[in-house]
Structures are given as C-alpha cells and as structure tokens.
Image 1 (cartoon, rainbow, N blue to C red):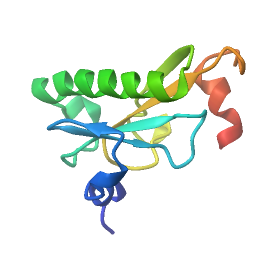
Image 2 (image 1 turned 45 degrees about the vertical axis):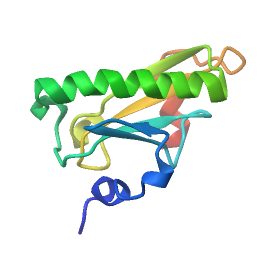
Image 3 (image 1 turned 180 degrees about the vertical axis):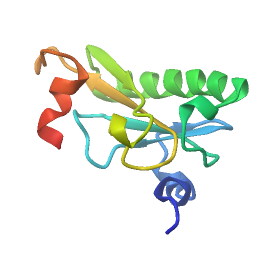
Length: 120
C-alpha cells in the first residue's frame, strides 16, 4: 500500500506552505482549529533519521506555518509535537510534525495529552 503522505505530497494546491524538504497541510482530524501537519517530502519513518539540512528546513517550515496560522487563526499559543513510532501514537509511518494552535478561549489543562484525549 502506498504511503499516504507520499501521495498527498503531489497535491500542491492543498499546501499551506512548503520549502525544499517539507510541505504543510491542514490536519484532516484537527485537535483544534488550524491544526497543521508539517510533512517531510522524502519518505523517512523516524525523525531520528533526519539529516542536518532536513532539521534546518523543518525550522523554516514551522516558522512559515506559524506565520500563516497567526494570520488566519490568531491563536494564543502552540503545541509542536512529533510522535516517533507506533508506541508513541504515530499512525502514519512517515516523519511529520503536528503544529497545533491553542486558544485562551478554549483552555486545556495538562498539555497535548489532555487536548487529544477526546480525539481517540
């Protein structure tokens, strides 16, 4: 079965933004309004396999995605997370980072685990 994120990479019209190594799309099952996925364009399963150039480009992609979400959703804060491995909760075996906007009007106690508990 083909990798979902490798397939989605071809739909550039859906990108929030991108760079040479990463593309950003809205999460299909958002934990909060604006929840985005920053996805590596090359197929790798673990963030621990990223090279220095990919890590640097991730910072650029996160910054671009944040600026876009700041403008469109005006959140008060963010959670940034990587689930690296099935036991960590990763559902698609392809490196991706969650950028989850947080809002003072919808406070969640306990961080990311509390925010996602109802999404399971």
